[in-house]
Length: 114
Image 1 (cartoon, rainbow, N blue to C red):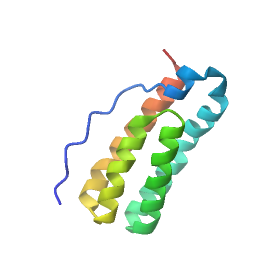
Image 2: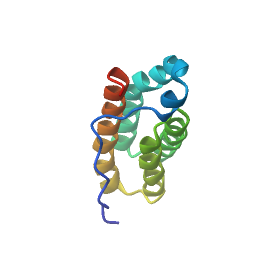
Image 3: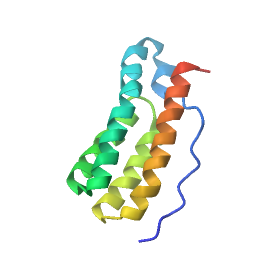
Image 4: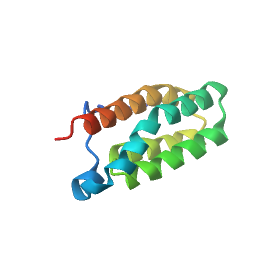
């Protein structure tokens, strides 16, 4: 399976949830500050080619991204789920750095909201 071109990663993402409900900042902040740990778990699963863990982590992050107002994270993880099912290592190797960029953009958006 060839690696599709992934969309450009933004440099700053603002939670759509926070735009609508600013008083939920604490829970959104908890999600965003937890992203590095989750990314480390995903990276370890990619290195081990642990397809079950990857499927679980991508699915969990897809849902959480949407719940916390980050549809970009959800879209990336939805795409990854398909490639995990196909055991597409090349895609995951391209996807992981893009996911890290989007997570960094969420952290930047939380630190400096619009």
